[in-house]
Image (tube, rainbow, N blue to C red; front, side):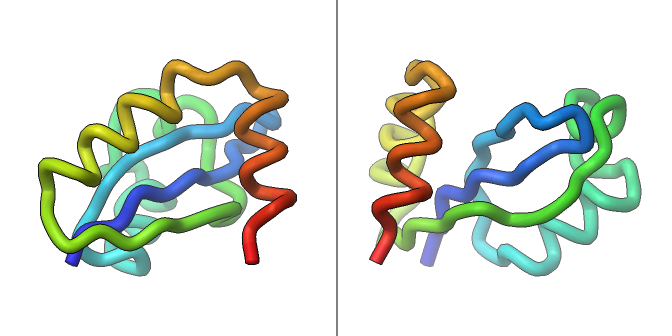
Length: 81
């Protein structure tokens, strides 16, 4: 299983990524090993996740969401069921 996730950073920005293990990836981001963006912005919490059966579909969705403006990302988070 693959997950697309959105995390809130310390400066209020929203980071989007994919992983096979949400908790492990959050720990990596929080410890500064998750990437340059989250290392500099600091991670607050996971805002949203979606589950995919394969990496290809997860990557497509990640790319789609990364192209969205902040308002659309916030609407996605707000409308999660």
